[in-house]
Image 1 (tube, one colour):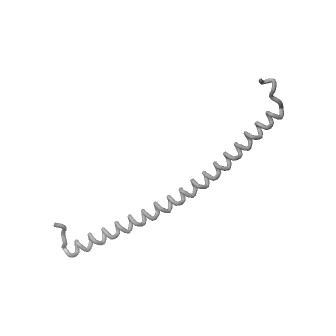
Image 2 (cartoon, helix red, strand yellow):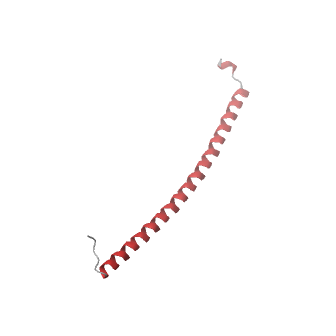
Image 3 (cartoon, helix red, strand yellow):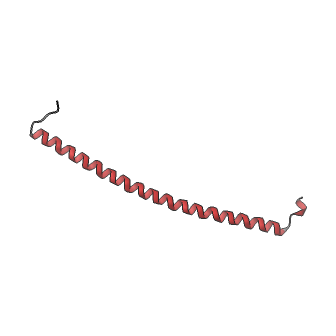
Length: 75
């Protein structure tokens, strides 16, 4: 069976392999772009959460100061 393998057959197989590798590289590039996009969105999400947490902490501090000035206490 190995005697029936010709250079043309090898060339065809190698060309198919090259096409498959090229397709894999293209998909890998697309996945990389998608991953960068997701990382960007995650970064923006985290920044928004940090701003919300900071605002909440500021409001809690203001309420604490107001309660102390008015001598209010939780029961």
